Amino acid sequence: MFGPSFSTLQEASVSPKRKAPYLGKSVVRMIDNLELVDRLLGEFRALIPLPATTTPSLATILRQRKANRPLPRQCQVTRIDYAGEEGGIMCGLDFGMADADSAHFVSITHLTFDRSVPLYREIEAYRKHRIKRLRRLNGAMSP
Image 1 (cartoon, rainbow, N blue to C red):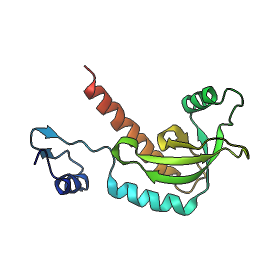
Image 2: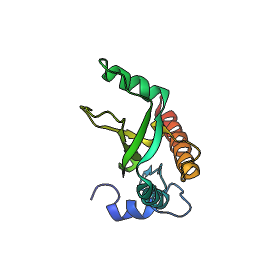
Image 3: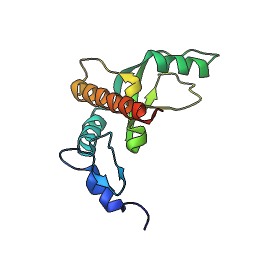
Image 4: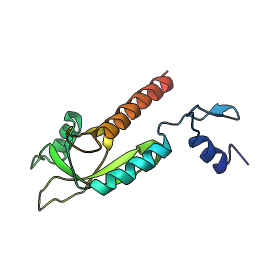
């Protein structure tokens, strides 16, 4: 067998101390704490739909795609899923337009939430942690 087994990777991903385990010649670095993600997903799903605001960078991208009609920055999160380490927590968005011609599914890191949202602190902690880890990993991969 080439590389670590799935069970070894799975055990490494739920390590309580979240240290990067040594598996062969490479180090597996986990971005998300899977136990925390599972808990957050369950609590988040119970509150859907939730109001959110797109970040300025996401709003710019969406505006470019919808040249004939602008989308508001305010939206509702109507679905939430986990896309693994690569995508993290993903949110399905509804902009309240009856004739919407496409679905919008974005990373939670591209959304902001009002402080009055019940899970605000947990969502912000996840977003900040994920952004920090992604920056660190991208910096480590740069030449």
